[in-house]
Image 1: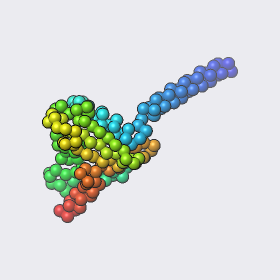
Image 2: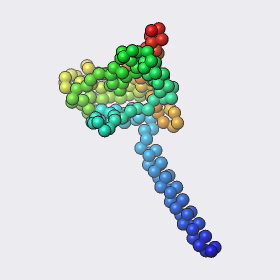
Image 3: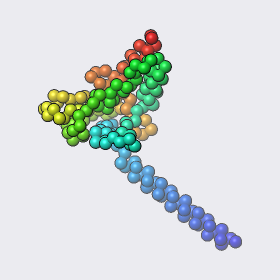
Image 4: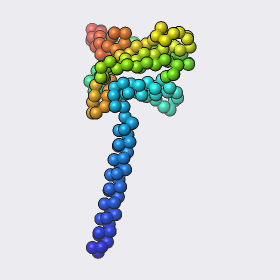
Amino acid sequence: MISSFKLVSKTALGLILGLFLCTSLSVAKTTSKAPKTALQTIQSFYESYMNFKKTKRNKPPQLTFSKAFRKLIKKNAKMCKERAKGDVCGFGADGDIYLDTQDSDEKFNFKTSKFRIFEGEPGLVDVYFDPEPSQNKAVGTNDKKLHFKMIQENGRWVVDDIVYDKTSAHETIATEMLLLEKN
């Protein structure tokens, strides 16, 4: 009886140890591929996003927003639902928040967009790209510029704000909510 208990204990210990090692290796593998900087986070996202082929079954990649930014967007969406009366309302309701456009042309992808990225200070990332590469204009003449303000939450870089043409998403959302409150 004692020897069978030792055998079961050794087998259970072996299974637990094996499971622990597999989990550890899986976490290490996942962590090693995770972007280490704000610039890498944005670069990796845009490579996936701009090359994404939309179908009915799959959804495009999304950036992770900070807790505060998600809360603001959620509050804005709730106000829009309650007060907008069918009007276009809410963050991203009238265009693509990652491209700052309503449309891009059919030849648009990461390579054709002439994508460029810079991080002047840690967490402040600027991206430039051409959403209409079919027009064959020189680099920079048809560019969109987005400025990402990134912070670290739970050990990873997340978007805390996006600035479009000198206007912060936070400011745009706050303005829209003030207008909704007046109506």
